[in-house]
Image (cartoon, rainbow, N blue to C red; front, side, top):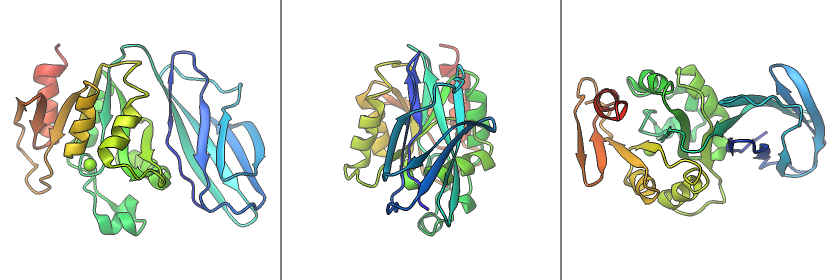
Length: 257
Ligand SMILES: [Mg+2]
C-alpha cells in the first residue's frame, strides 16, 4: 500500500488538516485509525484516493510539534505512518533544511530501489541540527517525492535528527525544484520571515533568496568534509563545505545576532 503526504504546519490557533493520498487505492474497503500517544482519537472508512479532513477535535496540540500515528488497513495490508503538525508563531525563528546531499549522502540506486533506510547521513549534520533545534524550529523541505515521506521520517529518526515536519513534492508536481520550493515557502514565510535555509543546490538558494530567507549553501563534496570548517559570505549567502562549517557559522555569527 502506497501512502503519499507532506506534514502540516499551522499558525497559532489554526486547527490542523490531515491530508494524504493512497496512490494505488482502487475502492477496496479501507479503514483509517488516528492515534495520539497510543490512544485512539477517531476511525473511519476511506472511500477516496485523497483524504483531506480536519484532525479530530480531541487532538491535544503541543506548543511545538504534535505527532499523530495513523494506521491504514484493508483486507490484505496494514500500513503505519507518523503525521507531524508543527506550530509556528509570528516571527519565530526556524531552519528550512533540504535533505538529499545536504544531510543525506544520497545514493540514487538505494533511493530508486526503495532502500532509503540504508543511506548514510552526512557527518555532523544530525548533531548540529539537534543543537540548533534548541534555538530554531526545524522544517525539512525536500524535492523527494511525497511517496517517500513515511520512510524518510523513519530515516531521520534512525539517524538521530531532530523531529520536524517534512514537506515533500507530489508526483503531479512537474514544476522545477526551485518553483516547488518557492511555492512551499509561500505558506510559511508570511507567518515568520525569520528563516534560515540550508541546501546544496542552486535551486535551494534561489528559493530561499526569493523569500528573503538567509541561505546557507553546503557544497556537495562527500569525501572532503571531515575537517573543513570554513564559511564565507558572498553574493548574499553563506557558503560552507561541511556541517562543521555550519556549526562554526552559527556559533560565531548567527546565534549571537
Ligand atoms: Mg539537495
